[in-house]
Length: 112
Image (cartoon, rainbow, N blue to C red; front, side, top):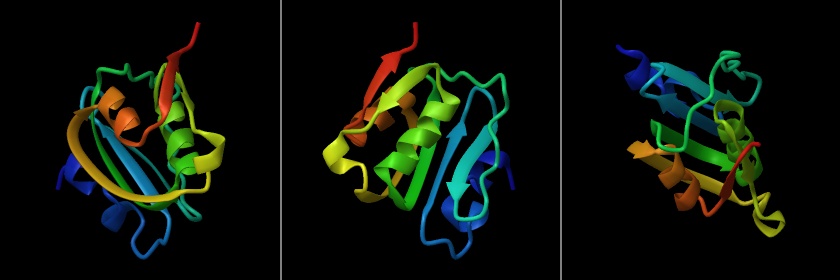
């Protein structure tokens, strides 16, 4: 199996109630969040908004997903306060990071 095919909640977080995984095509890197398991993103990882990604979310809050996306990008990711605890299930394949942010109805702002 490849890094891409292994970058999903079933493989990274089997049985976890809350999970979010993002695979970055340009870097061939999987980064994720699940209860008691948080693989760190490489220190040099700065995915651009036009980077192609897969995003797999199962039961994670928008705060958790926003934190994950902020950790892998050159942007600040903003989550509306009224939706911070909203839980999502979502699978997006081969989309831009920007499209994933818009699908979640979050906001990205390039860091100065």
